[in-house]
Amino acid sequence: MPLKLSSSAFSTGGNIPVEHTCEGADLSPPLSWSGIPAGTKSLALIVDDPAAPDPAAPRMTWVHWVLYNLPPACTGLAEGAASALPAGTREGFNDWKRTGYGGPCPPIGRHRYFHKLYALDTVLPDLGCPTRPLLEKAMQAHILAQAELIGTYQKRR
Image 1: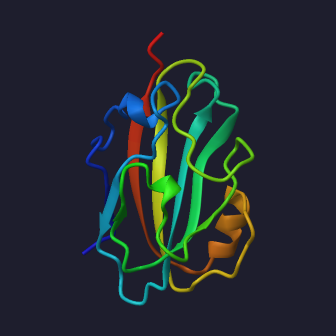
Image 2: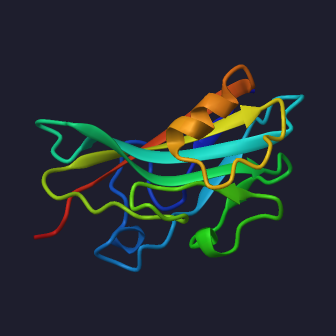
């Protein structure tokens, strides 16, 4: 069975509810996963927007959440879990230069938010609070499987 990532708050390609954005409570969405491959020692999660600041003229990827060393027995994260992560989970820096979840807050247009889950064959060493590129470098050659969930959001102006 392949690794699968889903949310009870939005479907693949669906609209992310306002409570998970800067216009709402900015709570991390509920996420669940299945199909963890044999040999998985830890999981990592990266949430980003590859079309910032404007989908019509993207200049960068904006990182919203970085987690690593989630235990493989964990099958998901509850809504607002950014404040109560599973034991052993480590956090990295998002592009607001802080740890934790930062929800969608696009300055213009409808953006796509990629929730990427990685099954790793190792528990990563303490990386401090890595940025997405540093975590991706540490994960190289350790990824057993990857799953992706894409949600969209546009501010209500």
